[in-house]
Length: 301
Image 1 (tube, rainbow, N blue to C red):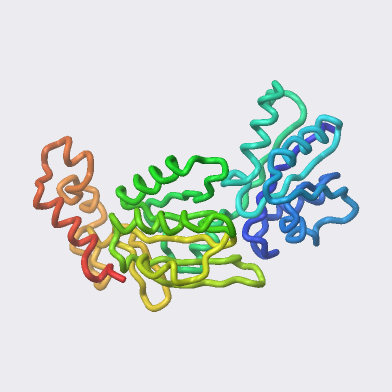
Image 2: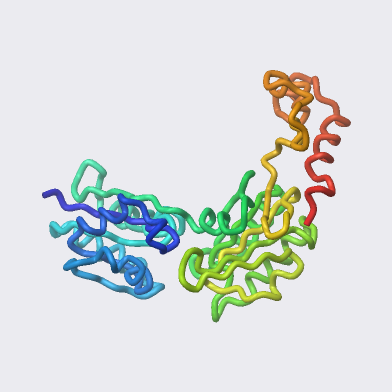
């Protein structure tokens, strides 16, 4: 049997949201490695496998141990909540292997098993906040300099991305989330919708709907994912919605549309597009009118 490392993302942590492949990888493995909480979340699929538990900040030693065991002939599953390739263990294990001169054609075999990332599981509980361009930013500056994180927040805010903030606050890191809010308020209305989701789909799940100005009035911790809307995001009762952009060319309150499906793709009906600018068929007035429709009062919090 060829030794193998499964890098398993098991989603938010509920049994309904883990994939069959993730369960199968855990069952097939001889050793399960993970942070204490992650081991508890997958324990129903663990039988007689050896278990290696490590603490929250011991990711490097966990990756090194996984490689060591696999090179000794074991089949190993390294488990991460969410998706193992999004602030998870996948990259780190590949880095350890690459540092040791490993190539994909050589043992151990490596399989990354995808899971539902926090941005998606949290968004589903809020409604549809990431229907348009979105990005994730971790506020943890333990491994990334704060100056770099600050530039990324500034860039994402100025470009009007929907933003999911991971690792927003901990016992020792309390000012980063306040700094993020300060930067965002330079570019976003104080009324911009914000969703705070703690422990999505777990027993202690908490979902809070608020806005950018008031988000720090609520509890935020390491288990919270903060989703901040863009300039078009709005609330409909308790549902957070970011328009995909159809209101530019569609009439959602009418069964009969002004433009046929073929007409919607014409350059003169897309004055904001790069093709329109290159062809010279767009005018500033048309572009401003399109932007005005996109950010109309109907789309405010």
